[in-house]
Length: 189
Image 1: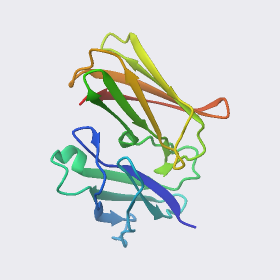
Image 2 (image 1 turned 30 degrees about the vertical axis):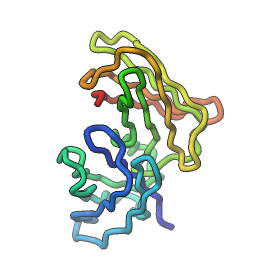
Image 3 (image 1 turned 120 degrees about the vertical axis):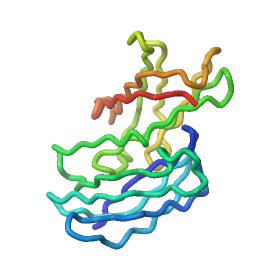
């Protein structure tokens, strides 16, 4: 059975739809393998099916397409592991994006990916944003995931500026119990 994998494509931090991402290469550790088809979900999320045997790590490089002007977002390096291994929880920072839709509104897209597999059973996410002095500035929370497990939240507060850097701490919950907490640094765009 193939495992569903998720990627996120953005340009300057904004989710991009309508792309046709492709693998530049995909390797099973000994040779190149056929690249799976990639289909669009929504809000910049794309998916593909790939079964990785237990104990194997597939590596690849994904090209989101020429529409993406920032090479750091256009090309996504991947290390893909079997989804059942509890010791290999890899959070893909590309599954969280934050952008400013206007000077007073921050938009947060968030999803939990473990071993490259989108977790569709999470029921709530809470994201805390800390400034450069590590002081909590605000929190956004959603208990309304879309059918594919992604969350979209907004925060309306005056004064957001492109270039602001925050440490974002996301806690994903399943039926009231925290199942995973991940942290990443995010630059607003």
